[in-house]
View (tube, rainbow, N blue to C red):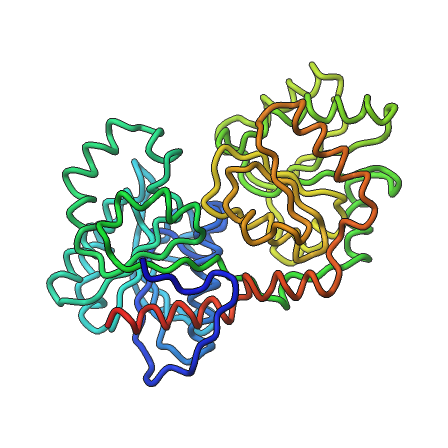
Length: 405
C-alpha cells in the first residue's frame, strides 16, 4: 500500500495544475447529511485555494429548490465550480439528470474523485471514467467497513457483486481517512494504491472563544458552575447515544448529585431523541438534557468552548469530525474505541473507551471531569494541526492524484 503520511505531510509545489472533478451525491450546504459533505467541501475549497481547477458534480437533494434549482448551471462556491442537478431521496440519491450529464464533465477533467459507495448515481461516473480512460480515486468514507456491511447486508452483497465490485476493480487509487478504515476496507481494495489522509480542518475556523461559550451556556440556561457534556452530530442509533442517560445518572450520583447537563446538537433522524428523553426520565436524569437541532458552523465553536467534555460513544466512525473540532476549540473529547480519529487525537486531549456500557463510560467521564488541566494548550493544538491541518491534507491529496496520472 502506498501511504501518504497521515501525521505530517511535506510536499513540493505541483509541477502543473490539475483539473479535478469531485463526484458526490450531496454537497454543501446539505449539512444534514453529515461528515462527508463537510469534509469533501473543505477539501475541494482548499484545493481551489492552492491553485487547482476544482469542479463538483452533485444534486440538490434536500436543498431549497429556490436557491438550488437543479438545472446544472455552474454555481461558484468559495472558489469551486459546483453543478447541482435535480436529485430525489429514495433508496439512496436518485438523479437521472446527473447521470446524463456526467460524461461531459468527466471528459474534460484530469482526475475523478468519487465519494459515493452504494450509490446508483456513481455507476454513471465510473462508466464515464472508463470510457475516457480517466484515473479514479474513491473515498469510501466508512461505507466498506463492518458497520456499513451489517446494514441491509443481503442487498449490499447483491449490489456489490452486480455493480460495486466491477467498479472498485477499475479504481486507480483509494483514499482512506484513517488506518482503521484502511484495514477494514483492505479486502475491497484489490491491491490498488492508496493513501491515508485525515479529514482536513482549518486552523482559523476552529478556535476557542470563552466569551461566546459563556453566552451559549446562558442561552441554554445552564449555570456556570454546572458540568456541561456535549454531543454534536446527527441523532441516530449508530452513534450509540442510548448509554448516555444511565451513564450520566451514575456520574451525578458519584459526584454527590452535582449539576451535570448534557447537550445534543444535531437533527433527529430515527426517533433517537424520544428514546433518549424516555431513558433520561427512567434514569432520574430528566430536565438535564438539552436539544439544539442545528447551528451554524460559527456557533459550533461557541458550543465546544462552553463544554467541559465532548462525548461520542459511537458504534463505528471511520473518522469522527466533531471530536477533532472539539479538540481544536480546547474541549477534551471522550470517544468509543471504534472512533477512528482517535489515532489523530490520542495524547492531545482525546481518550477512548474500549467498552460500550454505562459502567465503563461512568468511570471514564469521572476521570476526565476530575482532570483540571485537560484542555489543549498551544503546543498540543499545534501538534493536532500538524496532523489534521487542511492545507497539508489538501496538498498531499494532490500529490496522490499526481502519482496516479
